Image 1 (cartoon, rainbow, N blue to C red):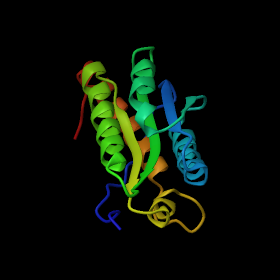
Image 2: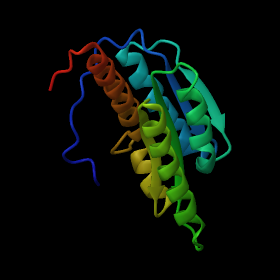
Image 3: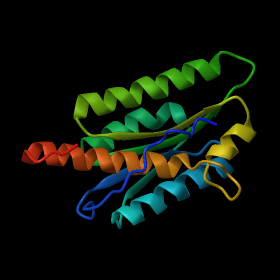
Image 4: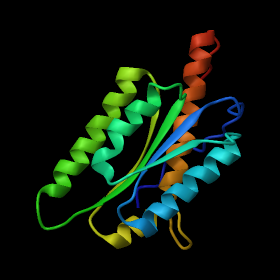
Length: 163
């Protein structure tokens, strides 16, 4: 499991942030865990009413993330899961989602929390989904990272960034 070495982020002062969450519909059980973890994290950060949008799959995440990022959201959380199959389709979807979400963040200056699981099988996805018995909660982690980064960017704009 790759969770070792992850930073412990404490997020305060985020109640005024506008956060969008875009979540795929594929693999509904895993997505329920990811979305639940993201919403829990946002609540703990003080974000009371995030915008939640569902899309068909992970390939569609970047275009909706871009719309959220350009319509007044301070951060976006992208959630999806792609499970390897017997064709190169896995590689194309993973690359498109990853490159697209990075482009959204760099082009707009709005942080995008990357909560897209790219797994070899369903067991790996479940283990990272935040469901009961999971060893990681990547939805929670992605939301916390997006909010923490939005606060850092706000501090930089104000000239008060700290390490």
